[in-house]
Length: 217
Image 1 (cartoon, rainbow, N blue to C red):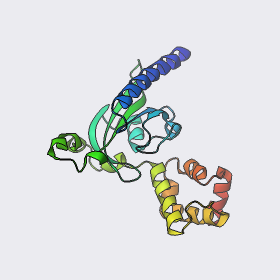
Image 2: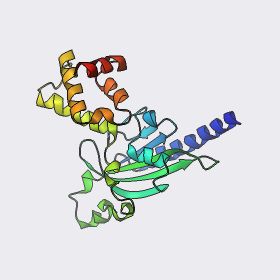
Image 3: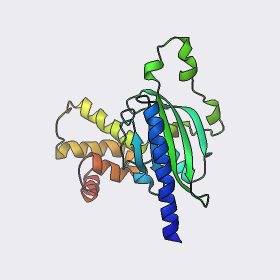
């Protein structure tokens, strides 16, 4: 029975991946489509198309919106909410929950439409660029969860350190990595879900080494 359920889940994901590929190709290069397997939220992305829009990749984890879907705190369909890419580009995003034959949440399908090319176009494109925040008003104090994932926070903090210390294109020394850990701890990033795995990956160190750094700071 469990084997049949897994096979069924696999077939469901394959269907959404095929659909996502067609939609992404149709609206390329402006629409990013992501398929998440929320059964493994820390490595949820199993397919992504036009990933130049956010820079995310297969194996990356879900954002907080995914964790809220797992907890059944959001509706299955959220359409046209305002979002931002890690680089700050304005996006119009939508999300669809994926359920298996038993009605269990197993994943999600995300759409990120890059509005940058259209922002300065004439009024004819206003309908395309318009986002609808009203549909998120039913979820007070949650809008921030639709913008940044934990990985985005860590990458932004790391890039800030690299730029402020003139380290672009240079390998980080042990001292630099210790300083980054101090920064992450000071800004509260370490306590976020999955932060230890993500930070060890970003710094190219093992988790035991990262724990040792934390003891040293």
